Length: 288
Image (cartoon, rainbow, N blue to C red; front, side, top):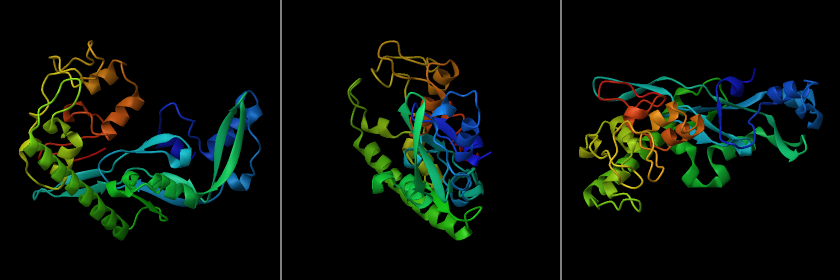
């Protein structure tokens, strides 16, 4: 079974993310309506060798859309904090596999699917930096592509430099918003200090810096949407529909696993509501 079938998790209502092997298995199932609409693909294309493995060497899960194949979250790696406050990579997350040639399927309706053959090089480039947009560059968050089974020490070190540069920028932004201290307008605009989400706090802890905004005093018990007072364990505001407790909203089925993962990756979920992305206290480890 392809690594993408066991490691990477499909998100969203977009086109199914299927490895060539998974598609081939579906095609060979004579009872499947989908099998009737797949054009045959040469076995050597389906079994092309691995070209790249994409690793997330940072602590945060990163949403990806590999050349339009479907949205996934590449889970973050695990880090341990030493006595000096420095975080060290202790366990790499599983990689996303890109082969020399990839089959991209397009649903054209009536159980019919058309495919195009795309180079793994192109898919790798578009996955790491979609459309060449530097604001979407995943390498700034610790994601890298390697031709090896696992990234080399040099590749990991270069990735760490980029990640720390990004985290330093986040800390500077949070410092600025803390100093501005502009008030919020419920239902209209967040106050400047309320913009300091859990991602900024993780960045500060990862960089081993102390800031007043690291204390969990920014988030009150008011609805993040309309400002109505809410108990901390209320999952969703009945007035405006905003999510107040993401973990509980996921547990009781108000939001999907997809929505929960995306909120975690975007830093919308407070520390005490995160299951898969643990942002620790001073003595704990950062993990995904």
